[in-house]
Length: 64
Image 1 (cartoon, rainbow, N blue to C red):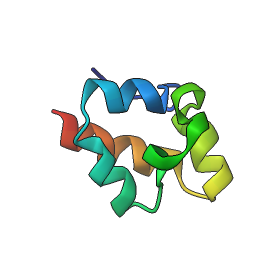
Image 2: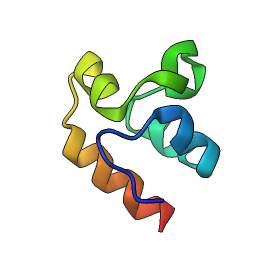
Image 3: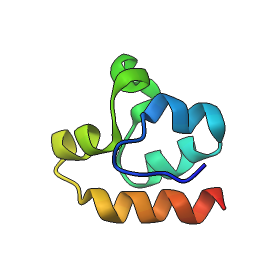
Image 4: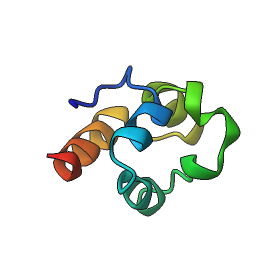
């Protein structure tokens, strides 16, 4: 799975549950958020004031 800013957080976590640790390390506790199943990375980053491109790159580096 190649992760993009349009990827749903729930799909990323389902594809690779170990990304939960990476989300937490970056300050995105998406695993605990009930809306994460339907939220894109872009939406989550906007809410948390994070650079979506950096988050995408980090997640892709741990899933490959």
